[in-house]
Image (cartoon, rainbow, N blue to C red; front, top):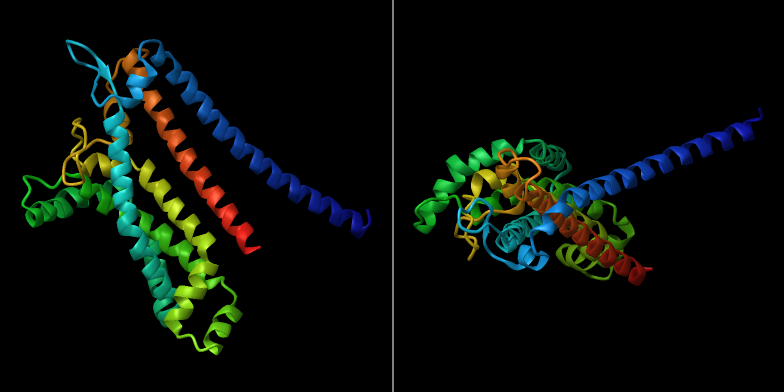
Length: 297
């Protein structure tokens, strides 16, 4: 076999390997969706879909009348996630910009690995800190009866999302061609103006990806919000009250519910709604990124 034929065979093998991995990811994703769909479908023989999505009361064990409304859980999940993003995005971008353009390289070499190590802290440990440290602090600061509230969950989720946002945003800013910055400085722009008006727009696609990945972690996180938000079934009225997210509800009730009952299937239906919400967020992010890249091309 000639060298050319051997090189072609090697390239085809590498292409086949990556194609196989891509197909495997699609099959796994389709399998999860199919499992959730099949497991959730029996619930809707007993529950009206409109009531399931738009009713506030979730009380499947009521002796009078069972209720399977998840609107409160959807709103709670959105509230906690948006609260976490409102905290994490400005801090994350600020730290990424500092590491990329301001910090001495020795400081960057120390701080960035430390930030990335934060991603490895188990969620149960962060939830524990929320119970013994952050929660009591919030209760004292805002004169509340207890600190197991939505804001507690948002703060902890922000901490968990920060390593992803900082690391990917810093990589995106560092990947901006040096000539961009030099051209801005040569035209009389300050270092701050170069960062805000040149580097951040140039790295926007990577920054959006970082924010979406951070949001994905916040939406799907279970243990931390289970421990920190109080898990109240009542419809949420703000981040200063206890609330229950969709992930928390599944984690609390799935271990105790009798198998193959309406309640059991309804929990899978919540998982299906959560899956579709996450898929929708990723799809919107992908559309935004494509439009931005087309505009820049």
